[in-house]
Amino acid sequence: MSHHFAPQTTLRAPDGRRKYLTPDERTRFIAQAWTWPDRGVGALCLLLAYTGCRISEALATTPSSLDPGEGCVAFLSLKKRGRVAVRAVPVPAALLERLQACTAIGGGGRLWPMARSTAWQKVRQVMEAAAIPRGLHATPKGLRHGFGIHAVRSGVPLNLTQRWLGHASIATTAIYADALGTEERELAARMWD
Image 1 (spheres, rainbow, N blue to C red):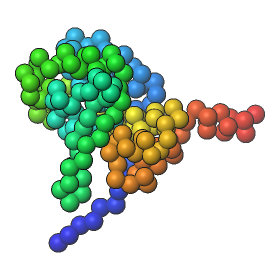
Image 2 (cartoon, rainbow, N blue to C red):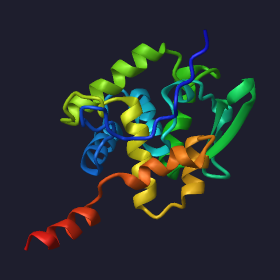
Image 3 (cartoon, rainbow, N blue to C red):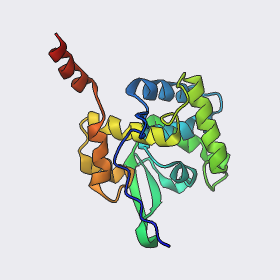
């Protein structure tokens, strides 16, 4: 029996809960990650926040994934029908330096030789320290969605956001343009005066 699942088309659960970090939550998370006592875990969290990569992609990162000359991190992503694609996502120089420092931790292999569930728990600890309440949004996937929204609100064209996130369809990326933003709230507030 074959099942077909429609791609995600909303940033909210059926009960209305959001699946993404707000700009304030994202800012607090990034600040917490920069100062996290375990610099390797902090770097993992920063990579998730600054690239929107999937947690499995972050955990597959190796020293050869880092490209200081181009100022980016290259991610391998498994595409439909088993094809492998590589995408490069630009990151701040300070993050690349932090990631390069992790190469000693990984010993030349993966930067974070840990299970996905362990990584998820470590990200959750940083979120709790950043005072981000538990919920659908307080996850690595919530970081990914927060990145997509931040990119679109920062004026990054949808096609670049699509490439950075590794989406096969621009329709998947377009959901980030639908997130309720400050501008929309300000326009609505004009109607209430």
